[in-house]
Length: 460
Image 1 (cartoon, rainbow, N blue to C red):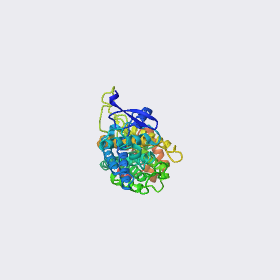
Image 2: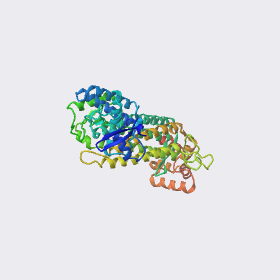
Image 3: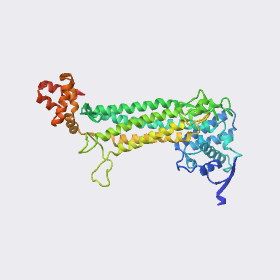
Image 4: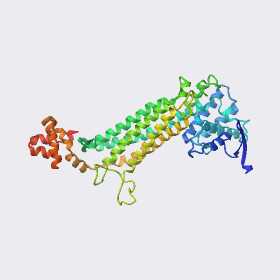
């Protein structure tokens, strides 16, 4: 209806916009151009972009490059964006114009129209506050968008680290709880020398801890910002003091230890810091897959598998087989981690696809990186809480399989030699007997020697 629309103009011409929305004509064009996934910007990414706009307004006012009346209205509108008040007006698909111009303009228009209202005007009256000339002053999508990726990633990574610490603690506690339980070790999925169940879980805890540390180390690069570089890293259209003022404001607004890049051109061109973080996430995913697969194997059964551990039952496992309970938390962990590894490949391909002074593939890097952090955080949390914490040891089964393990022949090497020990192992397999039974029958060692060297705990 005519009364429900307003007309806006950009360099391509006029367009009608719903009267009550805060976004404007360039966002409306993006809505028409990119009906791709139906997925909108991450709320934390919207928040981070609002922080950048607030810092830019403060820096521009501090350098005398922006009228304070307009600047304060922009700052107030940006603070409302930071608070999530206008998230519904950020409508651009995550798959959008190269470099993220559509998201940047969506932000500029929302803040401009809200600032216009604050000054007593009507949405769309850009003579009061202009999205490009005022909100985007001293900025370009090319320094705003990558800065927003970095800030958002740092916020989300802190949540991931917290979740990882919870899983590390759960695995460590299981390591302590199971420390006295000896079980058969396995290499090549075949019998190997004994190991304690607690040793396995303690090793899992350390693996997750080291993966977390690798990501933390990689994330340090995210604190170095190219803000102030504008279009190609030369800082065109900025006041000489703008960059330092903007970073100073961003540090206060975000609470993060942010720094300016030593080379703004390199920061505009390269996505290497984001690739390194994604690689760290992939490394964590690989460790989680390995651990989840071990847990699935160790709990297999309950009658016809290894059955050395018992997992908490969180849901029925089959629509047809009564009483079946599946290792669903380990399964969902695997699925998430496979997806993270796929996201890493996308990020890798997008990062190498930059040309000259800009990587236009930043939107897909952003979407995949933030998604990887989010889903890893969420799955780690439920894996720890709904699986690892409730794991119980099947001590009788561990003891039974340890005694039957052909890997026990290894302990004979120092006493009777490798070849004789191999002969014992073959006989035990053929006769269906334990290594201890064959050694006793053949009289290869005294009873005292057998009791001493076949003590399961001392072997570990």
